[in-house]
Every structure is written in structure tokens, then in C-alpha cells.
Length: 450
Image 1 (cartoon, rainbow, N blue to C red):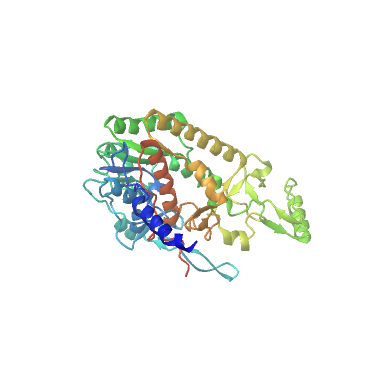
Image 2 (image 1 turned 90 degrees about the horizontal axis):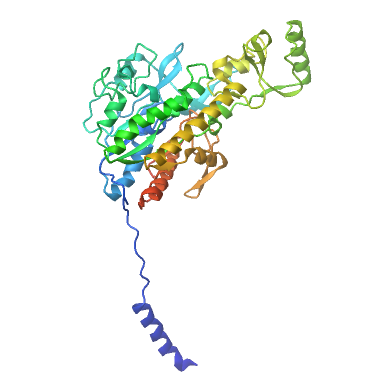
């Protein structure tokens, strides 16, 4: 057998030389899309808002900014942004009795009302003068980033959305990029952007400006009106030849902001439950009953006897509720109820669910009508809740440690935005026959531990 060894070796070598595998390298291609002039149209979730604030670092790691890194591999150009000053941040706080603005939250030590020190999100109040400086108007030629935090679609057509807002209850984020503050409209500025491709994620703030504050403010515009808003923007963009991708809206249960604090978090011993029952009975509030174990907190409700009742399963407390007041001053148990602005009751939950479903029907229909790629963020955020694997690491919706959400419990951090950007890329590739590679963002950061 040894005499066949050399000829066999020669034959194998010859086969290896003459029959090399012919693998075609998949090169980035735009397919039928054109990324030479890209713009982004949306609110918080396209702006890179995270940790409760807006910042240059967040802008540069936003979904559209990350997408454009990949678009540039297939003929795209630079994505023009009106960046905030470096190392500065400004967030719309929503509690004006404390402060209008705050800096981005960081993970640090906090001392609670009982003097216990624990790690959690820490933010600083931002004086009005500092906020005015950070959010000063910018005139940026060729602007592509029209992702404006807290802008609802009904404000797209209102010049007042770009007026000087620092003495009003209007977040100043469109004001800083308006072509003519107080005169121009967001929709007009977008149309003038001469886009060849756009990324749109609209309607989020319509829903969550309402849900975020316990459904106490003006409700979102009806789905039919939202559809008209989309038409007013998508029709001229696509008529001018632009193509794009549009995303639908995730459900509110996807966010730790609504799910972290349990509705039945009043954990009582039998003695405490009995004592509370005696107090409420003497007060005539016999419909409020406690028992040993977990109990629903007591909330404001004008439809209940004496305008108070206990929370039920399927109702939610927002992350902005004053936890020290609940822990040390019996808010939600005795003496004071949890105010309505921190609660979503069953009726409000049903309305929010129905409105999100109706908006998502509109978005899917508009994607088909205008030939857009469709990114199903409603489904993807549910996947995140269960856990998604990226680069060998599982990311889920767990607050702080889950790897997807930032410290405000609502906006993703940079790694979360990168995961979202990859879902947009998949939708673009599918619709337009493109071969844009998904990204692995090595400079995207997550929650930073001290």
C-alpha cells in the first residue's frame, strides 16, 4: 500500500490547486434604494435620547446615526446633525415643581428616606440658564437629523412648536433646529430636506406623552388624524423619489418604566393588615380591604366611593412615583393615595392598547401604500422582553442590568439603539434587495457601573 501514497498525495494537491471554492464576496449594496441623502423623521426614539436626557453622545449613537454608518458602505454620505455641546446633556423633567430640566442620569449611590444607601439612577437639576445654553438654536446647512424629542405629529404643522419655549410648557427641542424659529414648521423643514432615503418612527410621543404621565394630559390624536399627518409628510417625500423605512410602535408593557413597580407591592403582616382595616372601616372606606401578604396600593379614582380605591391586576404604577413617599410616608397605604399622574388604571390601559393597535394598523397600511420598508418594533420589543442574544450576550428588559434600556426605564441606551438599528437594516434589505451589513457597535456603551 505504501507505493500508492506519493501518487495519491500528488493527486490531492493538484485537486486542491485546480478546484478552489469560488465564494462570491457579498459586498454592501443599496439595492434599489439611494442613500446619498438620508434624513430621519421622528421623536425621542430616533434622537438617541437616553438616561432621561439629550446629549451629543446620544445623538451620535442614535438609530439613524448608526444606520448611516452602514449606509456609507453602500454609497451613502455623511449624516448631518445639529449636535449639542460636547459633554453636556439636558432632559425635559416633567416635574416643574422641582425643576424643568435635568442632566443625564448616572448610576451611583443614593440615600433613601430611611438612611439606607443603595445604587440607583442619580440625576442633577439643570438650571434654566444652563438649559438655554445647551439647547440654543443652531443653523446647520444640509441638516438630516429631524428626530426631535417630545414632538407629537400634530405639532409637525404648527410654527409655535419652534417658538422660544423656555418660559412655557413646551420642550425646546424643535426650537433648536427650526430653520426659522417660530415661523417655520417641522413638516416644512423635513420636506425641504431633499431626501433620497428617510428613516421614520412617528407617533411614539403621541402615545407616550399621554401614558408617561398616568394618562392625565390630552389624549393622543385619533388614528384617522394620525394617518392624515403621515400622508402629509410621506406623500411629498415619496413623490420626490425618496424611499424609506418606517417603524410601528411597541406596547407600553415592554418598558420597565411601567412594569418595575408592582401594583400589589404593599406587603403586609396580618397585624398591619388588621390595623389598616380598622382605620379604613372607621373612616367609612369599607371597600378598601387589606390582608396578609401582597396588596394593591390605594390610588385616586373619581369613579370610586370617596374617590379612592385599591389597584387591581392589570393596572400599573409609573417609575416616576415618589418612592421615598411610599416607603417612609405610607403613600398608597395610609394617609395619602398615589396621585393619578403616576397610575394607569384599567380603563386607561384599554384605551392605550387600542390606540397603539390602531396606530400600528395605520403605519402598516402607509408602509404598503408608499412602498416603504417596515420595521416591526412592536414585535421586536416583545422579543427583547423575553431576551435577545447579540454578540453572544443576552439582552432583555430588566431594569439597569438587562443590557437594553437606559436608566430612565423607557429609552434604550446605545447598545439598545444598535440592536434596533439592526432590525431596521433587516427590513431595508428585505424590501429593497439591499445587502447592508448589520452593525456591531464597539463604541456603543451600556449602563456604566461605578
